[in-house]
Image 1 (cartoon, helix red, strand yellow):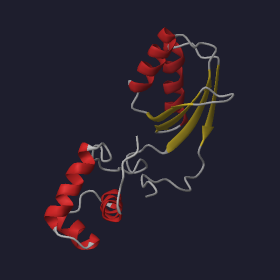
Image 2 (cartoon, helix red, strand yellow):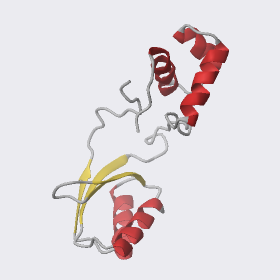
Image 3 (cartoon, one colour):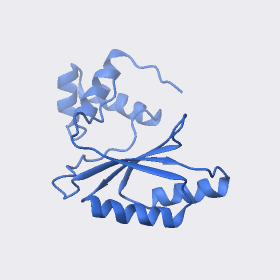
Length: 153
């Protein structure tokens, strides 16, 4: 479901995407408005589900999580019980930053952030011990060229 946004909403959202820790005064100044109308718009955008939770973006390498793997999964299992166990296994693992179900030859792709290749192997061994997987291909990211949380507005 799409929400109708005007130019002011888009400016406010752009500011929040850039730095949600800014004060209302800072945002209002940058978007050319006053604090109360900005607060009311933010509240309405939250109520409409446009704005979700606010978080801090951490530097994985500063935390020792230097290896990023993209894991391609093919499965021959598509029953509800297998999917339930698979989704639970993914949700229980903090290493899994993203998981997507795909159309095409690959069933799922995971973005996994770990300390090193050994840590990835521990993750992999735990995953395959919990759910039957037909084929797994792990691709190590050599360099992150672009990573953003900013959506095009």
